Length: 284
Ligand code: GUN
Image (cartoon, rainbow, N blue to C red):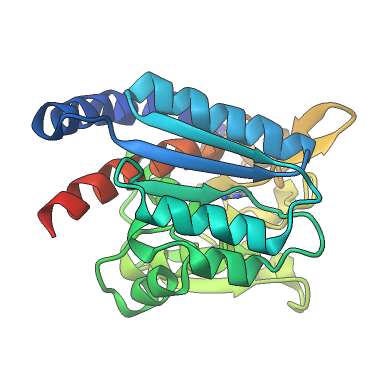
């Protein structure tokens, strides 16, 4: 089998078209643009690229971005003061703090400071807890994007065996919960899993979020599987996924490329979360 490529860029573009309309509707109704505050601390090169993409997507959709670049020596108090001000700012509907933060800054404490209503990333404990309990909440962007990518293939998720490799708070754990919410049978694998390939070979849906270049080889993929590659491994200036694309695409029915798969969807889900937060705030 030669897999069909799931075009994250195209799916992203069509969702952004819809969001453009909703952002314009918000502006028409409330006399201001939807606003997203983007905070970057330090000069991590990957973060620079991600933040630039997020700001560019805001512009495309008609969301106003408020960009804050703090030096790597910024203190926790300074960052918290900024978050407090943005929590109170009526022109800001969403706030994100780009991760990772420089060493010495307490990520948990800082993320907890963002008002859950303005938590565009869905990282706040209130939203993470809401996700687990099936309550209305802001869903984390990469996992939400992954569900959209799988849906776009027409694959019925219910009853399928979904295997997630990776157990991070940003991707592995929440995507497993979302897949469970879609009635998949879910297995989470990680670095301590014994005979991991024997489990991934059972996956109808395989989500690779390990952070290791081309970790998933062809012999780890079931014939006909839907393969979602979350990897963003930079090596000698080139971007590599967590999946060996030529090998896996020889087995899979559908596969996401890197770049152009999950990445664009993460950004689009961030904008969607922000637009939804803006409307929700006006209704409450
Ligand atoms: N760093 C890597 N992925 C993400 C993300 O989705 N959001 C934020 N804020 N930081 C990240």
